[in-house]
Length: 635
Ligand code: 7RM
Image (cartoon, rainbow, N blue to C red):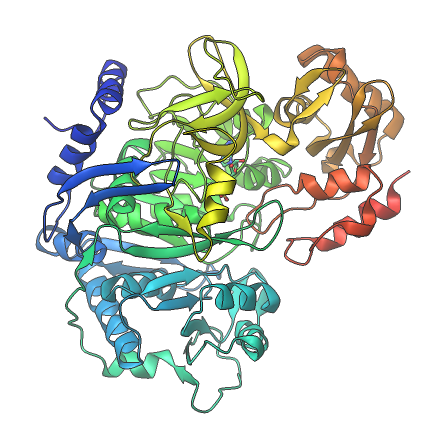
């Protein structure tokens, strides 16, 4: 019996119960039936959250690229593995078959070897969303090198910090990148970063924009010339299941970025299994995740999860508003996309614009639509569900983290009934619980608390590169024997989970615990509001009071702000109660966001509290200029 593809709700509960009662049998069977191993494991799992130490499939040998590429050649060699859609809609899309992917990954792997890279070495990848990006990850994995992808929107300083932290020997980049109407000088950024990275010995440069770049003698080489000379055969390095596959940096609330380390066997099994179930993947589907491979979402659900299932995965180089706000839907129509996976920030940006941008395209190929990265507010949920999903493609709100490696809470489409803003139920193998501040588990229904996980799942990050103590302190010290997510959540009467936001966003007003998400949700229901963010600031009587930052839709511009303030508080009163009314409301042209689209409430909180002297590093924000605007227009 295969537990691999869940088809109805009773089956979900049955499979879920098995995953809790017999986790080792559960994950052992899935791993055995659906993957290629060079050697069987000795033990499915050993773990200790106190140390912490977690090992999955110990003793097993494999190469993840054999699972993502080689084994599909016999049955699906001519099938498109990667479908590349360029920034410019007039440039032809590129269909890379599994056969071609095999050859290109092997050539790239041989180039890495010829340039001194071997098993265990770290390679930094700083590339735009072009095929070479996915291929370079797989080429590293082919030879057992550890990739560390840095999102190609990060600055030279952010790049050099990450290169130095994991002592990368090589950097893979391109001359530049296209983003909408702009081009970006990536090689120039790399040159600047490499002024302070003594560990880097060589740089491979892909050509994308044909700009004139400076090539440093003895360090920099054009990639294509090397690939052309390389053999299309490269035997996979046989890895231990627990050998590191990659490092991916994620910013903590304080201090330097954390290099989360993911290992090979468990990561492969979990991303493949969750991809199949959360996206209801079938053989002829064309799956598109709009994330950048620079984030975990791209690693797990553009590259590894889809390819491990032999899927067709789309890579989009561009942005949602170029050449206009219809681009996403144009691509859905053009490639007959079946699964579409994006972030709430993109949905809200598109929902601000005329509906005609959506309605002029045929979206009937879609059968699952997904959301990830932030709580999806109710209005955005409905807009997405009605106008994109046409109320008949289930919307999967997927909660997970860089640290979890794969999706943890999510509806299974066509199986789990959805409710707006709820990530619903844990996937098989995931054992969530809610904790109070004193360290007691909160049992029962209709309760809220801090979201923790009781038991390991195969793709949990194993450590922070070079700082195991910080790994322990951050995730395993808040509560004994539990993984602490840093998020707050509530559990409703049927056991569904709703993420209420990061716990540091929880605001206690007159003794009431208020999550930011439900309040922002209510505000965003106002027809003139595009987006909002709530923070707390000290109040003599209430302890904390609420401060709201609100951006308006085009239709709301020019409206009387005092009237809007009243209407917003009226909506909050109706949705939550007068306790959640805002003391202050500031209208702004935008909200500060990370490059992956998350609202930076930490900065907004400091501004609300008048602590503008220590805002921390804002240079890695998507839009640092709005911070200044907000400070200047604050009353
Ligand atoms: C995949 C990713 C992780 C943090 C996480 C949450 C927030 C992500 C959702 C969500 C509500 C969701 N990794 N988050 N997904 N909040 N609903 N569906 O985003 O490491 O970059 O961020 O993102 O706070 O802890 S991440």
